[in-house]
Amino acid sequence: MDNQSIFKYSWETLPKKWVKKMERSEHGNRFDTNTDYLFQLLCFLKLHTYTRVQVLIDICGVDYPSRKRRFEVVYNLLSTRYNSRIRVQTSADEVTRISSVVSLFPSAGWWEREVWDMFGVSFINHPDLRRILTDYGFEGHPLRKDFPLSGYVEVRYDDPEKRVVSEPIEMTQEFRYFDFASPWEQRSDG
Image (cartoon, rainbow, N blue to C red; front, side, top):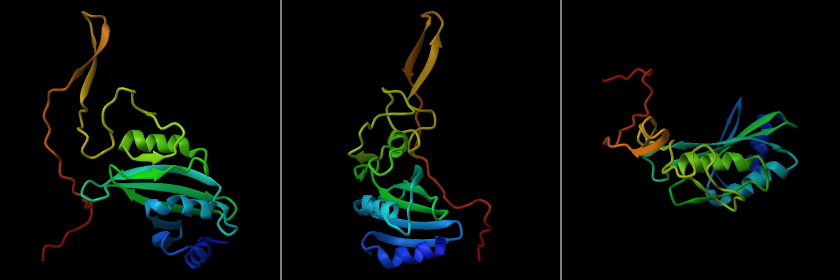
């Protein structure tokens, strides 16, 4: 079963409320879903005979500050049986909690911790949701677009005290505007 067949079968079989949008390409299929139906959709894709997604390649996050639901959480999946890649995307804001998929894919534990640590997206029923890449006392989430480029604290070695000290940074930074248009695309002005 190839990507096109999996796409067609999924479109005919899945409940329409589970999937907001589906796209097919030669490299894989993309499903956009609501956070309420994410777990059910991933369960279907893993357990159904004609999809058999056994591998969660990774989970990543994207921050779009101009959107109401600013965070996009992307699940990249692989069906080794059908040699097919599937991308499942959902969006969330700062307070929306997403269902953890650790019970379906045990490797999701590390990926969900990374998304929480870097973006602040929280997962319901995660067995060990704590920081994975930053220090335990770290404030904020460094991959958010509104996080200051210089951070909030400066860590340096103090030679007279012979120890590492953390000090607040006293630089001010205005909110940055992000232009998502590609600089390589030609714009026509008339």
